[in-house]
Image 1 (cartoon, helix red, strand yellow):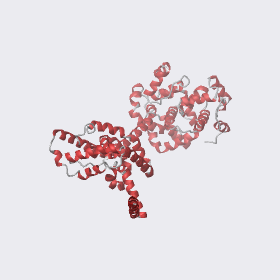
Image 2 (cartoon, each protein chain N blue to C red):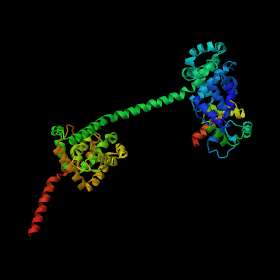
Image 3 (cartoon, rainbow over the protein chains, first blue to last red):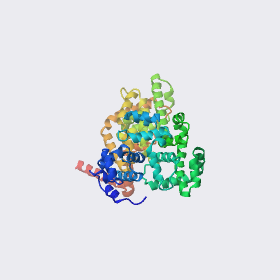
Length: 90
Length: 436
């Protein structure tokens, strides 16, 4: 595992508030657009889905791939980002 | 595939019920999570259908693929199986690379076994391993490792459901099953752990319970004997003499103790920690004078027995009344807490209890006098009225502590002689003042 990205560190460093979904690590403009179309426009909505899936890594990654055609790496980055954020702030 | 159609038509609640029946985690089924959960449910029910039909599983392969050479179509089901198994087992974060490394480690030792199995089931994968470079060989292995786990579980849980549906793909079935064994193991461990603890608790109570049962039996026997005016009472008189005399000396506690005696069993375990070897010797004599809540616990079946012996007493002597009274006095929580209190705190509690008891002393004395007199006259049964070891320390409370304190003062300052001199002087002064 390589070092964490700056995007990841920025997100995990503080409460997410009303951050856009694109602030999540692994989610750029493209995936952010798809997520927004699916109704997940805010980072906390994705967090909600992550929590609904009971923090299950496999389920969440599958969901990411299902909703926005994320790659495994993108899904994994997003999962790690949310998981670490929850450990810090939840 | 018929199963898939059924799942799509099911409501969220029905889907969740099916997932629970399948042994999957209790995850709420929502419109947003429905697809993912249906996939997992299919994967768990029929190992075959899920890998072939679901695009997600193929993506999992992709994650593995970057590390090693791209697997053939046949290898994909294996990867899916791995992904399913790994996810439920370990929830710790992993990056893709990390998971692969872990899997590789697991698989290496197990490779030969897995390889043999796969050769029978999936010749394509086996051939690939042999031909490919070592890096490529690792990839198929990770898939195999999860299979092994699943196979263990598969014998029990999945075999019944999956086999009748699709006997053709034996390998996949065990994989789906693998998810179930993990939670079951956890629960088993917990159960065992709980059982062990519970056993320990029960064991600790046994001795005291036996003693209590003995005491209760004796009391009942005595009561019956008195009513019948049988000759048994006369025979047992000798053993109890010392005890009775003590009772006479410290009549106050008798009331509490007697009442508490039948109730004692629940409170006994909690009181144990207090009882120490040093305290036991003091227990009997000093304990009697000390009333209060702790002292009420102290007197076990023995004292209760004595009070029960006294039939002449109108209201108090009846066993039912005593039990209820004891119940009121008993405070199990406090007794349990006392374990963790320091000796100072325990002594403080005793002192407080003494004061309370002293206030009510006149009343208790009467009752004690009756009980002791009645018991002496009636004679005691063979049972010796010893309090339980655990309860004894409580008895020591005031009188013992006071005695110790006096002894320590005596040793340090030789107070007795000085006190004697002071008394004499005071008497002389008093006499002098009276006559003059």
